[in-house]
Image 1 (tube, rainbow over the protein chains, first blue to last red):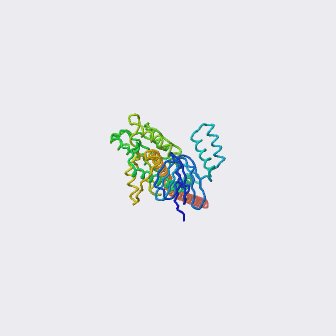
Image 2 (image 1 turned 90 degrees about the horizontal axis):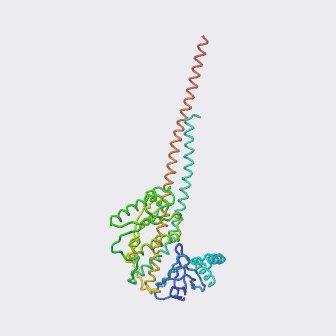
Image 3 (image 1 turned 30 degrees about the horizontal axis):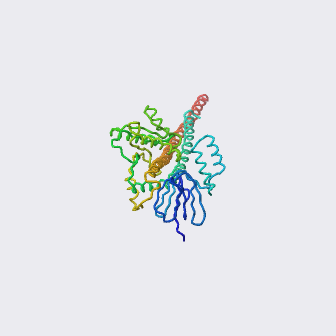
Amino acid sequence: MAAELHVELVAADRSVWSGEATLVVARTTSGDIGVMPGHQPLLGVLESGPVTIRTSDGGTVVAAVHGGFISFADNKLSLLAEIAELADEIDVQRAERALERAKSDTDAGAERRADVRLRAVAAH
Amino acid sequence: MGAQLRVYKRRIQAVTATKKITKAMEMIAASRIVKAQRKVAASMPYATELTRAVTAVATGSNTNHPLTTEAEAPARAAVLLLTSDRGLAGGYSSNAIKAAERLRERLAAEGKEVDTYIVGRKGVAYYGFRERKVSESWTGFTDSPEYSDAKKIAEPLIESIQKDTAEGGVDELHIVFTEFVSMMTQNAVDGRMLPLSLDQVAEENTGKGEILPLFDFEPSAEDVLDALLPRYVESRIYNALLQAAASEHAARRRAMKSATDNAGDLIKSLSRLANAARQAEITQEISEIVGGAGALADASAGSDK
């Protein structure tokens, strides 16, 4: 059996995804970081963006996280985000509409959120 | 039907209608408690992970942060009071307000000025009626608070604690909310939220025999703490809001249950009175008939002579 790490992806109001994985790629404020089993304990600040989780059965889970933290210790990785959505849950058309609306309203926050969602879907 | 009996019948009808309403409110509140409790449970993973992260920073580095440093001479404190938007919940809001009053007195005795922040229409009305100054207030979501509400509340609080006291900032942040102990017990409690004592957080969480490893901080311990602490405060406020919502529904359920019971008692005693009135009416009618028949018999007996 290949080495695995346990991943918990939690949003403020729910647990989004949890399971075993072989690789997790996330973007911290100082650049992309890939965590594999046996990584040294880590605590980092996440940028808004897609997080890629390669599950132990060979699948890939992509989630959009809007800010948050990554912490890894004892082969357990937790991704904390105020808002986190799996790419499968994202309504592309709605996100596109939101992006256009945000652009015309020059609402930077909403524009960023919609952009993160679309990037997560694209990476899926 | 006699006048007395009619009055009783009408009152029984009115009380029955009220009983139906309170019974419905009781059942609605009961179903909402379950929903609110589920929300509290759903927010737990985030809160636990966040606490772990804060503990990790606390044990892994000696960084100082405005949110964790004690002021030498605290001169002003902020009090965040959580009440409900709607009434008919027994002593729920007034208990929380009373707890806040006690806290105010204590803080005033320590020589601190108190800034009040209020959540819920009931608290706003209480302070408004007494024309007290409220720094900021939020209403409209105490039934089922969302994380964005907690964020909205935390923002000005964190801002004011980071400001200098001379410029209108505060040194401490206290929160008063109703803790949900069980379906039957809810306590209005107050606690100091900021400045956060990292040692205390660490003590509470490493007591379970868990030794935290030395973390690598990305990009640096200061930056992590900078990003982490506001989230931690938000999550604590969110948890308090959720517990307060569960408590509110539990208090409302209890109040409505006793209202329903009282209505039942009232209907019972009113029906007894109504029965007595009906019986008295019948007795009177019988005696009138008997008396009338007797008088007729007497009269006809007299004419026969």
